[in-house]
Amino acid sequence: MKQQNESAFWIMNTGAVWPAAVEEDIVPGPEVRGEGRPPRAVDVPTAILFTLVNLTALVAVPLFGYVYGYTWLDWALCGSLYVVSGLGITVGYHRLAAHGSFHCPDWVKAALLVAGGWALENSALKWAADHMRHHARVDQEEDPYNAMRGFWYSHCGWVMLKDPHRTERYAPWLRKDRVIMWQHRWYVPIVLSGLALPALVGYLAGGPLQAAGCFLLAGVARVFLVLNSTFCINSVCHLWGRQPYSTANSSRDNWWVSLITFGEGYHNYHHAFPRDYRNGSKWYNVDPSKWVIYSLALLGLSRNLVRSGPRHMRQPVA
Image (cartoon, rainbow, N blue to C red; front, side):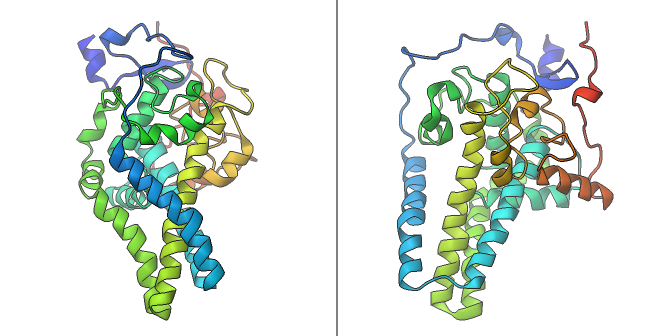
């Protein structure tokens, strides 16, 4: 059992690599679906931060647009940074850091993690640790964004509350990765740089008013949009959609979520085969994240791309 604990909690299960349990967790805890859940305290600093982001995005951004209007530069930067920071989460945080779906040089990993940091979704260390706990304890009380608690909790409510179950034991390898730890130490400056960059570009292009427009639209509004598109994976993709690969948990494939999350909407497939570098495994599935990873491989910038879908299933080890 000690060897199991030291092997990063991975086991083989019908062709997919799943996070296994440590000794005291061999029998999963009971699901908590209704009354009797212990109340959770509000995480005040996080709640204040996200309230400010939401108020700015929903009030200040449209008000500025009504009074001054936005330029083509504002919109171009907003769209570009949405793609960059969104792929930083899906390719860097999710498929690389959390699941090890491929390998890449340190400088490529650093670039992906900086892009992910611009999304204001915590450091890759904390994000990936929470995500691996989600896979290990999906739909149970320890699941960070447990969909059994309802749409609003799984979408954004969990962010505002202190999590008594937070642990890194499902992803101990993360602290051994020097790039992930570098990004963790520099997370706050990275976040600030993602807001300062559009403001600086706007200032150089047109002065203070242009800087304000770029900051509001390509900075704050873009963060708001990336956050909510990512949150849809936790909420929508565990409540509505198809389950063609597994009914063992609440995960669902939702094609329209993939359109706004660069392929992450094929969530039932992902839970069935979590290490696969593809979430949309079929050629016609809209999964820009897998296209980016594959393109990096063609350029020699990624390797060891994991394919563990139905065609690559292996029998469980007895």
